[in-house]
Every structure is written in structure tokens, then in C-alpha cells.
Length: 328
Image 1 (cartoon, helix red, strand yellow):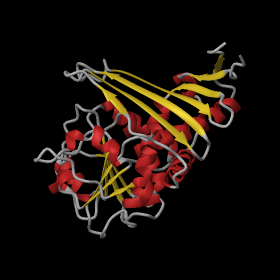
Image 2: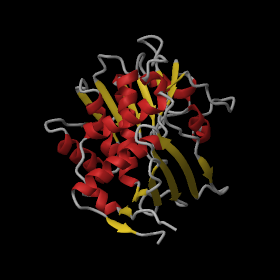
Image 3: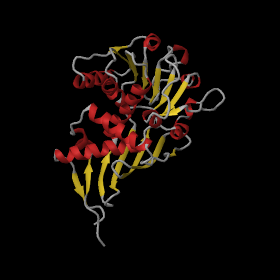
Image 4: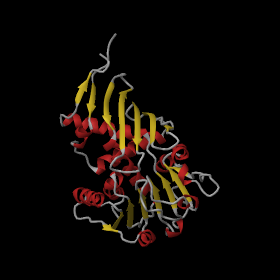
């Protein structure tokens, strides 16, 4: 029996050393969406399991990227019985396989990939759905997603002149400020002390907070023409049920993971358009300039594949990682 080639193993610390730009990330994710919208990629819905007390949640995801002809398996497990960010346990992995040779490519921690992929998708949602003269973006939350939200929003829409952050954790706020200064020299973020006031002037609202956030933005605060993008928490269910237009990265995944945004009748609003179709020009991003657009950003593994391959190439260039003959 002939065994496949060795698998490249990339740990979280390996991936932290990889040098990568927001432009690289945005381009890779957009390429993955192009292949998906053209029908060359396959991205089934995720499988989810959780106990009744919701102390943990686990996901299993599979996809094939037609652009690179790569198959991926992704797993995600979060254990958080006390709703305490200092005690939460989160593990996520990505394994990649070459669908032209049958060889394994890599097995890696997927934390940094997810931390970059999701705000990159938000960037594409902003580019597609925001009004052209959108100038103010508000980020709600200062965790991992909040840390990278502004650099990727600016990479997608450099016209933003006013950057705001609503958050409650000093260390998280400092991390957001540091990342913005590192990637976007000369840009600063204003810390919001009045969430309602900040929401009412924002053209784009990125809700990336954790479950314990005090933010619960109602639809009546949203100004006409604004875009609200839900990644984590921070928006009330009314922002979905009262929106003029609904966009999702995947309507199927929104039905699976977005149940907490159901309306008073217990039902989720139907999605008007999916992001891959918008990027391909087959669907509109909004009907009018005055529409409040609600966008649901759930991860698609085809985008993890694109970023995973980018990290693999750069890690090899930098001599990072180790190899494992798992099947020998």
C-alpha cells in the first residue's frame, strides 16, 4: 500500500508568526466566493450538537473549493458553562486535502483563520451592501472578531472616516486600538460612551460581541440606509424582523445558527439574497438607498480553505510548522 505524503502540522503559535495583510485575506475570501457562486465549489450546511443546558456547542463542517480543488474538514467545539470569557474553552481545527492527487496537505489550528475570515466576509458585505458614501462604522464588541473588524472593514471600504467602538473590557479595547494602529497607521477609533447615540449616526454596525454583552440594539435606533451585520451578539431580534432587506452568507446556515433572532411569532424572516449571488451580480444588495439592510455573517468552509491554503504557502516560505506521517 502506498501512503500519502506527510501532513504539514501548523499550531496556533506557528500561525501567529505568519505575516499576512488584510488585502491578502480579503482577496482570498473573495476568490472563494467567486468559485462558490459559479457552481464550482460545494459547501453543505453545518452539523450542530449541544446539550440541553447549552454548556457547550460543537460544529462539524465539510466543503470542496473548486478554485483550488481542495477538500476540507473543519471542527469547532466551545465549552462555556459559566458564560465567563476567562474560563471558556474553544478548539477549532482545519484539515486540507488535495483533490487532484489525493494527498493530505495540512492539519492546523483554525483560530487565526476564523479570526480573519469572518471580518473579511463582513468587509465584503460592507462593500456590497453599504451606500457608497458610508462614512461611519461602529463595532460592537472587543473580542477576537472585534480586534480585526476595523482593519478589514477599511480594506474593503477605505471611505470610512469615522471609526467607533462600543465595548466593556479594557484589555479588549486596547487590543482593538493596537491592531488598528499596527495595520492602519494614522487611523484612530473613538470609544463610544453612549451606544444609542453611536448607533443612530452609524452607516454600518458590526455586532461582533460575546454572549455576555450588555448591548442589545433595537431596530428603532437604526437610521435609514444603514447596514447591520451580525457576527456574534449585540443586536436585538427586532433588527432582523424589522429590516427592509435581509442578506445572508448562507440562508441554510442562518436557519441553523440564527434561531435566537426569530421574531415575535417565533419565525425567522426569509432571506432576500445570499452574498455569493450578490457578488456574482445575480442578486441585489438592497432595493433602495434608504433600506435598512440586515446581514447575517456565518462562516462558510470554502473561505476557510482559501485562507488555510494561503497560510500553508506562507508558512512553508517562512519555514514554519512540522510534518507528521499520520498514516505510516
